[in-house]
Image (tube, helix red, strand yellow):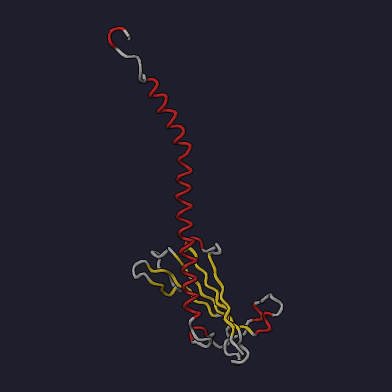
Length: 170
C-alpha cells in the first residue's frame, strides 16, 4: 500500500498525450486510404450504372423487328447515330444534339450499321463494308448496334460500350 493512501496505477497526463499523438499520426496516414476507397466506390457505381443502362437500351432495341423504323438507316447513310443526355429533372433520356450547360452527367450514343453476311467472313469488320441506308432488303442480313455511355465531363474517354449484332434468318 502506498503512502498517503494513493494507489500508483493509471496513466499520467504525459502518457495519454503521447498515446494520442501516436494515434493521430497513424490516423493521418490511413485517412488517404479511406478517401481513395470512397472515390473508387463512386466510380465503380457510375461504371455499373453506365453498363446497366447500355444493356437495358440494347435489350429494348433487340425486341424491335429487324426492319423497324428505329433500326432503319436513312437513304445513302452508312451509319445512324443518336446522341442523348440524361435529364436530371425529368429522369429520362433527351435528344443530345444541343446539351444544356446544366446537364453534365451522362451521355449516351447509339450507333447502328448494317452489313451483308459476307462482311463477317474474315472476322474483321471494316467501316467500308457497311451497307448504306436504302440498300436492297435482301442484302442487309446483319444490323450492328453499339450503345456507349460516358460521363459528359470525360468525352475523350471511351466510356462503356456494348455491341449487339442482329442476324436476319434466310
